[in-house]
Length: 265
Image (cartoon, rainbow, N blue to C red; front, side, top):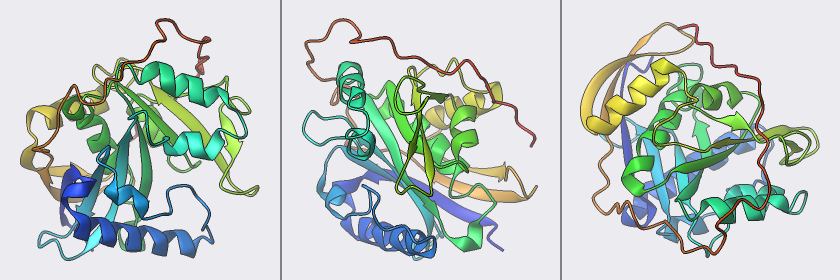
């Protein structure tokens, strides 16, 4: 059983070796579920300076247990949610464009190996870190396209369903057998919609980018010692605030009124 891990954040172009291991691990997990055609199942993202990587690894860095990516909107490379849903509902392009003036990004590529399934190691903990580093990289708005399993994690950390795209925020993706939900956090800095416990943890991570803590897994009631290393030396909080000539919202973004932020751990 894994009881001690490291969670590290870095800009993709600054650690290509770890990116390659991330890609390999992610593809293995996707293949287990017969999923091959998701937009993030490529290796070109590792050359994009607008992508930041979060990895869950062994203390010696030799073993990857999972991870996630945060891709900032840079006006050049479309976000994964745009590539995945744009043909089904083109409103997503205008939404991303509008919010990119404040700094917008997407949390994607979330995965974990079977050996840590159920501990939150490859899902909740990296999702927290993704929101924690938003301030560091200058991102206020955070999008994500969730599987039914991970929707609850995103709601805990402030995500709300985008009900005016797709079928009330849902899409059949990456195939007709799977349902994905589009979520959106308008203020990933102050997190007014997050569960108070999660907000407190995220704020603590921002103030303590490099520290060691014992975290309780959300479902298996186990303690995991985590070595956090979240300082991104090249991060610039003004890098991704784009010059967009769109002073008002192109249309109102309808968010779900349902709040499902209850925590039972």
